[in-house]
Image 1 (cartoon, rainbow, N blue to C red):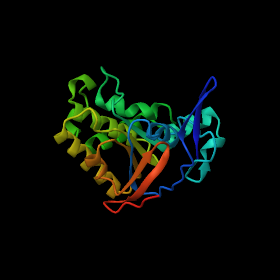
Image 2 (image 1 turned 120 degrees about the horizontal axis):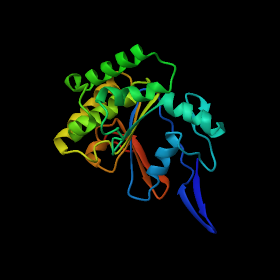
Image 3 (image 1 turned 30 degrees about the vertical axis):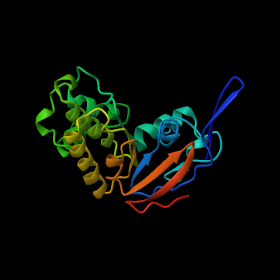
Image 4 (image 1 turned 135 degrees about the horizontal axis):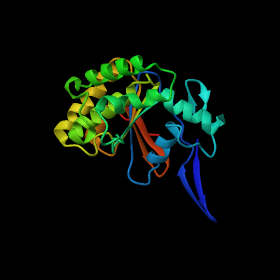
Amino acid sequence: MSKTYKIGELETVALADVSFEIKKGEFVAIMGPSGSGKSTLMHILGALDKPSSGKYFLDGENMAGLSDDELAEVRNKKIGFIFQAYNLLPRTTALKNVMLPMVYADITADERRRRAEMYLEMVGLKDRFFHTSNQLSGGQQQRVAIARGLVMNPSILLADEPTGNIASAQAAEIMEIFRKLNREGHTIIMITHEADIAEYAKRIIHLKDGHIASDGNGHRRRKI
């Protein structure tokens, strides 16, 4: 698929004939310098944007053919987002932040509470249910964001620079959570510019100037 942005007479090619498949249960890191197209690719994979040409299939369904309302439903039900900036409500408890995505789905209040508690406990925050976001450290806030990304049992956990705002020791703890989630069967796609963080993934896709420069496992990269 390709993505071209047009402003007046100026056209900018962000992605050019990018093609790959991510299977259920994979842990993939997407790397590239600024301007390589990784942010554009993340927006397409997250159903926040559509390719200019080509197709993107999620669970066998062509995202390019969906309406804005249908894409919003896909984002809520099939994609768990974890952002560098956390995007938590600051004066709201960890529990309520994690429950938020379920408010827009047909899920009872009791079930919302049960799931939120379960995932917060999973990421090591059993004793932080009622702490507000501004009472938590950066690493703890990112754990809340991970729990929130999981509550809808998404097809994909999409993480955008998930360790960018936290100290290296906390970053290692967050990445171990991702590893554990992946071992449990979660599909994870992570955007990062940090090579040491990318190495936690089982597969790394390198982008350069809108093209896939390499795609491979561990230290054995396959040049394209």
